[in-house]
Amino acid sequence: MSLDAVTLAGQLIACRSVTPADDGAMDVLSRTLEGMGFTCERVDCGPEGERTPNLFARLGASGPHLCFAGHTDVVPPGPGWVHDPFGAQHADGMLYGRGIADMKGGIAAFVGAVASLLAERPLKGSVSFLITGDEEGPALHGTKEVLPWMVAHGHRPDFCLLGEPTNPARMGEVIKIGRRGSLNARITVEGVQGHVAYPHLADNPVHRLLPILSELTGRLLDEGNEHFAPSSLQVVSVDVGNQATNVIPARATALLNIRFNTAHKGDDLVAWIREVVSRHAPAGHVEASISGEAFLTTPGAPVEALSSVIARHTGRVPALDTGGGTSDARFIASYCPVAEFGLVGATMHKADECVAIADLEMLVLIYRDFLEAFGL
Image (tube, rainbow, N blue to C red; front, top):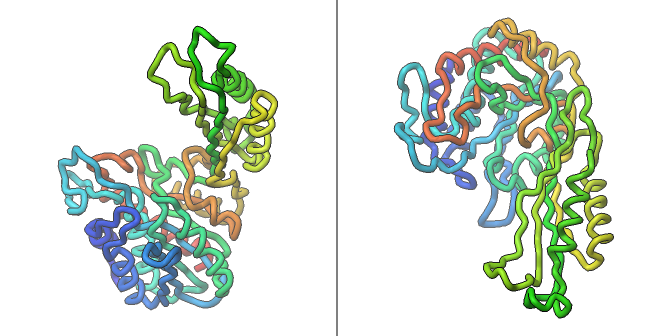
């Protein structure tokens, strides 16, 4: 069948799927894929009344099995738009809309690539789509919960391509082959409130919090490695909730984030933070959450094939990168090798988010040639 990826991208943009809303985005995609012969299943997860929309679709039953992963949810449009954020407007060779870069355009391009291949011949293996409506939100009941369902139903992929906008400014700049882990921690030190003129009657928690932060920030976590920059601990807030200059506070808190590479595990870093806090403030409290562990997909045949296809279409050999924030690849990496490549992300999450229509059409060709290079 023939399918215009630009038209499909516009149909997806028109769905006001600001996380956690779906507004029909999954239905648009399901109808399109079913028309191409895919078997589509909704795998909505989460508590009743608040279920996250998820879609799994597969065409073919044999290997090799390539899965394309993505999300239809978007961040709120915010103020300052010239173009309707849900209008899919064309202007000066650009397609505007919330989520076109991150990442409804990538989804449309991969669907278009599969349709282009099917118009010529049947698949030699299997292609599947893992699409969630909970990537921009908490990411608790999206890709993370669909993956074990896929394995339980015999759908473990041989490789996964995630269509996040990996290119900073031009197509062909970057393939993501890993991501840093991310850890958030809140440190709370209790004290005794009092007048600053009578410190012997109070207990200043700030005086114990400061050496905690000094020790934590003073440690060189690592020097990085071949694929990752050095891990980084950043203190993002220190607060006592005090508006007065003559009052010793009763409590002091600090928030920090660690973006860590494959030299560390999240639990080990949490244990280190707790140990430092316990020495300086035995009654101190640490709340920590690990949103993802660091991972690396060792470059091999699929990544090399993807790189070769990208270079052929763009004239650039993409860098194999692990920087930036987290993505759903952090969940996928535990089940199969995963790499990320998509559109230019310069405008993602900004007002007047847009991509060049020529880039979207080029991405269709890149994805199509990668399907063939993968053996499909």
